[in-house]
Length: 274
Image (tube, rainbow, N blue to C red):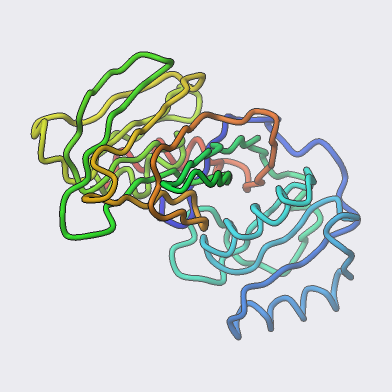
């Protein structure tokens, strides 16, 4: 899965259970996506996202992730069906203009839950954000970060010296997590990969697999000398003192895929890609 297009989730209904008559079309600002949107709107009509049975997202994985975040921020549960007008398209279905309502009616659904980041800065300010990809901590300056890792109230690693560390969702395990040599995790595993980024000490530590119910706390050591930024998808918080991460199952979003091309199948296939 591309870094911009990964998600946390478990398989939902095997098929999208409702007829689709009202479609909202959204498009990335590329010429291909915007022109495709205009043709589809002329053919099928369009409505507001909050009134739609489904949202059709035209673009690439990054724009799909932005669209899912916008829907979550509106506290909506409208399912999103992507059609690839971008480059990678791991989260997207093949683009085709014909029989779109029928395709939506046959689509398989995956119900997704984000990670919630609770970050406290050196000044005591609190920032919260949701992540459908992963929450990552990254050193801000030339010196490596020093981070203490606590899981469910128990210190598991007193000091990790590294460029950074991340907690990924199962679907996100194919993105930045995989680039950092973390494991790919099937959606149904209910596990969260915890993966170091360029670990210096302990040098051979490759991370851990945590239950999806885990509460993870990162505490930054030597704050002034070794500042760290935290990133939850699009939200960056600099000079953090601590970052707490947990899955937020109160937030739900749904993504739709063509039959036999569901998110679980794509992640399994990725494990056999060389």
